[in-house]
Amino acid sequence: MLSITHAAIATTAGSLIIGTADPLVLSIAALSSQLPDVDSTKSYTGLILYPIAKYLEEKFSHRSITHSFVATFAIMAIASPLALWFSWQIWAAVAIGYFFGWFSDSFTTSGVCAFYPSNARLVIPRNPKARLRTGSNGEYWVLGIAIALLIVSVQFISNGGVTELFERSFFRNAQTAADIFKKSGATHQVFVKVTGVNIFTSENIENQEYKVIAASNSSVIGKDTSGDLYQIGNNDQSQIRPTSVETRVGTKIDIQAIEVSPKDQFISEWLLSVPNNAYLTGSLLVDNAENLRLPLEQKKFNSFRLSGGNIEISNATKQSLEPILDSFIVDGKIIIKVRSDEQSIRQSDKANR
Image 1 (cartoon, helix red, strand yellow):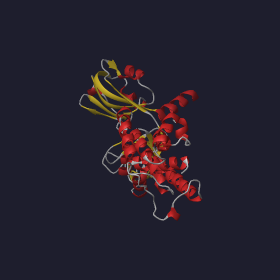
Image 2 (cartoon, one colour; image 1 turned 90 degrees about the vertical axis):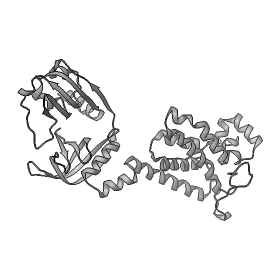
Image 3 (tube, one colour; image 1 turned 60 degrees about the vertical axis):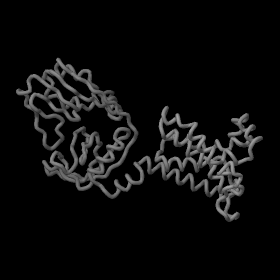
Image 4 (spheres, helix red, strand yellow; image 1 turned 135 degrees about the horizontal axis):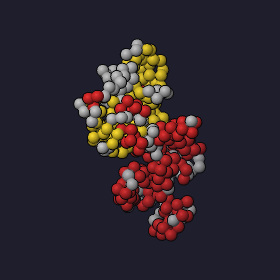
């Protein structure tokens, strides 16, 4: 069987079994699929690892010890530190790649010694006419099918997998959007296209898209193109009551989050150290809470509220904190979250100004 066929089968198997579209993991599966042919100096692996290949070629017949369960278990044991040093997926890619690298040869005319040290050959299927020959039309059909399955697998996984794809297609609600954000929101943009009504203004909303920046158990907080935030869901805190929520996963992003404890300074002074594109969540104890008159926003998401002497903040931007800039912070705990996709927008806005 051709090296590329080994690689395609092993990569597809790795993607399906591990459930990943990570190029590094899939590449390791493809490379590992070439290792069983180290028992021949005529193979690509044998040419690269010639001293090892020459020794194995002299000691064992082709497709014997290296094409067996014994060799697979040995490779799994040798590669086990990879699970600790890197990730279990890297280790699994080595094991899966190696196994399918030799197991696919059991469908060829000569088969493999899968149960070494037994010399009995595993050949599938029993009908000799149905077995594959290297470079035959049958092998190219197998190669084409493996590549097609790989493309489908990577596409499904990149979009959340088959289960998530089904959920997004047939359960178009805020609960589904919240679930997808919890799975993907830390690494990818998540968008919702909403049809529904703003329950405070009775404004109809038709296919309006929002970028999700946070989620609860059954609702999401989305930002529209003007930068306003809305809670979307069927609970009492939501401003938008949706009849349909279409969710999609966008491009990959980086999110940095740090916890800070501001104290003994005015909010306006503290905000000088906060990035313009940050989202703030937490609590600030201020000394003039009884004199504050916070604006009550009903049709949009309220980023902060007063609770005793504390200002409770949820996904607030620096701009939304303008009404309380003159407050003096006695103590506080705030999580500052910065999204890479927001940063590029802010920088471009700054450049335009």
